[in-house]
Amino acid sequence: MAQLEEIRKIREKKLKNLRKLGIDPYPLSTKRTHTIKEVLDNFSKLAKEKKEVILVGRTMTKRSHGAITFLDLENGEGKIQAVLKKDVLGEKGYQFFQDHFDIGDFVEVKGILFKTKTKEKSILVNNYKLLAKSLRPLPEKWHGLKDVEERFRKRYLDLIFNKEVKQKFILRFKVIQAIREFLISEGFIEVETPILQPIYGGAKARPFKTHLNALDLDLYLRIAPELYLKRLLIGGFEKVFEIGRVFRNEGIDREHNPDFTVLEFYWAYADYKQLMKLTEKMFQYVLKKVFGKTTLEYQGKTIKFQPPFERLDFFQLFKKETGIDLKEIHEEALKEKAKELGIQIEKGEGLAEIADKIYKKTFRDKLIQPTFIIHHPYGAFPLAKSYPKDPEKLANFQLVVAGWELVNAFSELNDPIEQKKRFEEQERMYKEGFKEAQRIDYDFIEALEYGMPPAAGFGMGIDRLVAILTNSKTLREVILFPTMKPK
Image 1 (cartoon, rainbow, N blue to C red):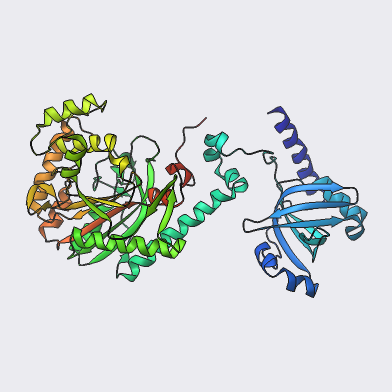
Image 2 (tube, helix red, strand yellow):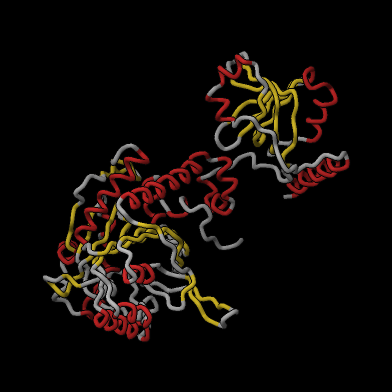
């Protein structure tokens, strides 16, 4: 730390000296003519023309050998070697660079392109300009895997030194764009709904609470956009989607971050079976668009996104894996089974919540290939319609890939009387101690009373999808700035 402070003081002294000489160490603009990538892609042509180019970038290395200095210049898209010679810049200009420029500085260099004796693409600098002075030295060694926490805390350094990390976020952007393109091509329109809500709803989760001084009103950061998107169906929109952040005051682990990105879309006059087919079609489109293929590797396993995805009934799967028939077992007996597995049960949780915890603890991780888990127990999703052939089940599905729950979707409940009954049941569970239970939204019930068309709704965690598609172990690897406890 003492050495770092000493280096910082030296660089601050250089900064002050530059200002004394009338040189702005953080100028407003640059006269760049080409990006480094453009130069590298058209190097032979530009070098043959011997036309001067102006490049910009961060100095990543600096190697001086008497009257010549070599720099590695990077700008995020590529790297090129800059060569500074005393006989080209003049003794004064050459020495000024040596005295005032450091590794980490952003610079502008002007010169002619050429190849060195070792065939390295380079620029012979005849003029230079400081664009931004760095006061802290870049770490000489940045061990990604050995210093994981520091990587996430200082993502800017992670991006500088680990090119594969930057590539993950470029792929994240491409995945989101492909999803957006697909939905628009299917006739969906993109909308925005409130992040600050008077009543949180659309999922089972604990919210973050805040206060609006202007109206002296308590508000919540949304846990899902669902109830507002359904209001749009009531208002006459038939196909709507939103990609945005949601906030849940829950634990942080491999699969969870307090704020994360979701895709939700709603499709009027469709059901959950049609939605499964659309889901398969969307995955085909996105993977082919971004990766050019539908088979990927994830943590040593080959994942094939080839439709039709397998469909497994939750009740049948549960019985096969645990020997328990959810239709026959009493809630208290199921609770005892959960305790035997070391599962903590919250006050107020019902059979659906307990069964879900057992499923996640014991056999969800076995589901590697894309699999639709259909027909969860009544009570699992208070906003889903019941399955007509068996009221103990829901008309829903979850998509599981490589043990990750990616998608939660169902035929939407549009009966206002039944919805109110479901909300009241959730409110009872909340009062008994289940703090993730949904709350009654009377305004939403009123909206339903005006009539909502039959519809299918879809929710997917974008971060989880990107984690799988980029072969990442945790969400933190695909969220630029994950939530971290301050040092």
